[in-house]
Structures are given as C-alpha cells and as structure tokens.
Image (cartoon, rainbow, N blue to C red):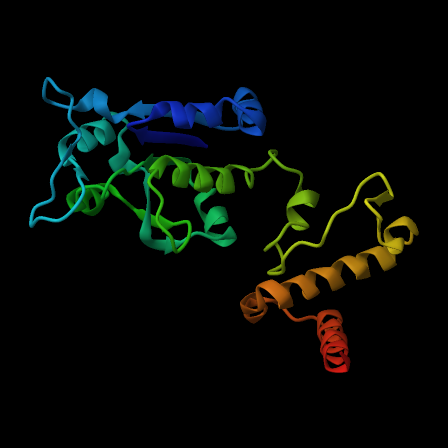
Length: 243
C-alpha cells in the first residue's frame, strides 16, 4: 500500500512516519509513504492557501486552486481520497479494514474552517470522522486513520495479536498484567498464574463481556452472542441483582 498525505504542516506527518513500527514497516517495504506540501502549489507570491468564506462567517477556508494542483500532482482522481472531517462517516475497525484493501490512499489534511466544497465534490471519496468533537489539526485526524489502517496490513502485526484486540469480536479487550505479580498491594489475578489455558481463556472472555457491558453496552447489539457469552451475561446479571 502507498499512503500520500497532502498537508500544510509536513513536519507533523513526517515525525510520525519516521518513528516506531511505521518506520520499520516502511523500511521493510510493506508500505510506501509520500508527504506533499500544499503550499508548494500556491499561485501567488505570498504562497497563500486560505481565504475568507463566501457568505461571511468566522474563520478561513483552504482555497481550491493549490489543493487541486497538489491532488493532480499525485494523480488523486484515480485513487481513494480521504478527507478527515467531523461531518464525515464515523471511523471504526471495519472501516479501517475496508480502507486497507486499497492499493493507495491519499489524505487531505484540512485546517481552519475546512476545505472548499468543490474539492470534496471533485476528488474526495471518503469523508471520515474520528469522533464527535472538533480538533484544529487535520494532520492528527489523518494520522489516527492511517494508524488504524496500516497495522491491519498483512505482516505488520501478528494475526494472534489482532484477533485479541478490542472490537475484533465486537467486544472490548480484556485487561493485561505482567511482572511483578504484586504491585502497590494489587495482585495479578490468580487464574493467570495457574497455567490452565482453558480457565484463562474463560476468564479473559468474562472480562471482555464485563467491560463491554459496563463501558460500551451499545456494542453488544453487533456481537455474535454465543452460548458461552450468553451464559456470562446471565452470570453478570445475577451478580448485579445480588448486589
């Protein structure tokens, strides 16, 4: 896969691409990256990329001319183009997997009040929201999506690790513990020290269901309720009523 990012602040994107697992998988050739400075395509001597919105209102809007030239420079019209925006479709694990099937993704990092609608109409295939809130940096939103996508690519993270993560089965992830066995008066659950694989798996599923019920009960509507999960839900309900 290739990821191309159009931005006014390439240093934000490059800092992430040059660090941690992303840098490793890029060096291994599992993913290619390109960062494009939108300002390089500005057409006036001041290299301006924003202007006041028609109709009035606060803030500035990214101009269409520099953006269009930047998009054309990477042949964006033939690729999947992502624009992170609070008014987009919610980003989730399934969406990340869907985007991961693309050969190339092009990201437009908005700023200020956003980008000219005509760019969205002509180039953008996916308007994506990372949550019901507003942040000032399209770069940060783009990096959230990129991170969610690339780690699902074959060979980046082990299949076993991915299958145990939150949302992989529709449930939140179970808690993790490591050495020492006691910390600040808190012990590692005894079952994890037992070496009994079946009991450990049962405990982990119990904790997944328990946490999902407590924090994200809405997720249960999408979960394949197996007999084991149904039994656990019954146990939790019985315990709740007994409190």
